[in-house]
Image 1 (tube, rainbow, N blue to C red):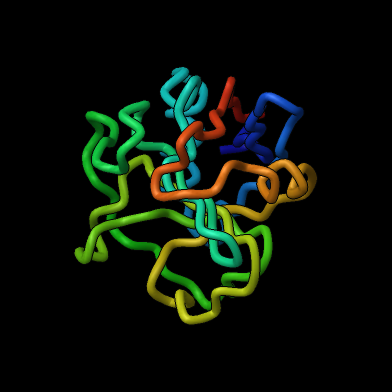
Image 2 (image 1 turned 135 degrees about the horizontal axis):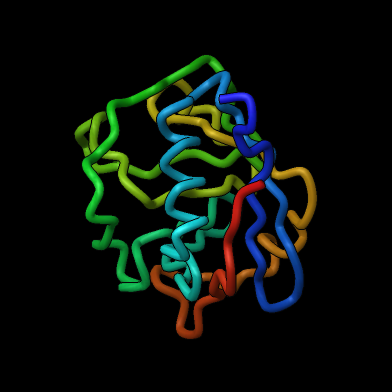
Length: 152
């Protein structure tokens, strides 16, 4: 795709988080994330699991409890050697490695124990301070939300 999106923008209450997409690592996952974002799937969706020193997870379709997903089929894993470090955007899944659908997480710090077990699809370029500031909890009492998401 010559005109494939290069960035995903998540508008939060206090500003934008810009994520550089990595189709070189996970073409099917990047396609899914951009498709869902541009369909409005992530608009209003909370970060339902925010663990200090680890990661912020969202994308469950607005249910807010981590059990939701899109109506699209689950994706086959696209694991790589890309490290899970601060700002890495990766797909959440169940114990089945081929169960990623719509949920994703962004690492606060190095989480190298996840390497090769979760699909990395992007890296935060700007706005990591906004991710750092998300309300903490599983789920947070008043979770931070994605106001709008789009890929371009």
